[in-house]
Length: 100
Image (tube, rainbow, N blue to C red; front, side):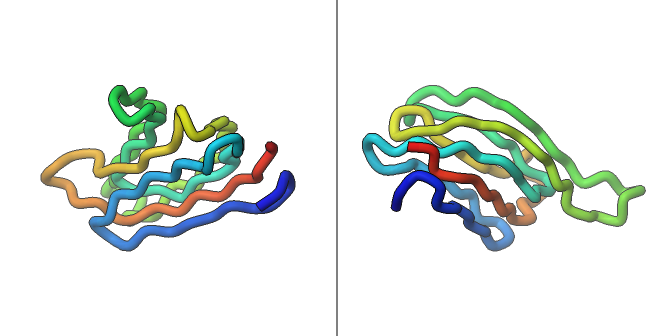
């Protein structure tokens, strides 16, 4: 991949995901579609919670589309995980652009 390439991924229900770019690659995540999930950055040992979403009964259970600017690389990368053990995990998608 080269700078300017689009990165995107989707996960199935009940499947957490991690996106760790290759060494020397930098990506900026620009958008998320999430429901009942935590959005974190991690270095593999420590996690930093950036965003929590939960299913709100009044919204009909729709996904939340979130515009973000999350820079990640091989050292600090993206992690999407279930918001709570009892609520289930409804899958996620993200997209971004490789910047280096």
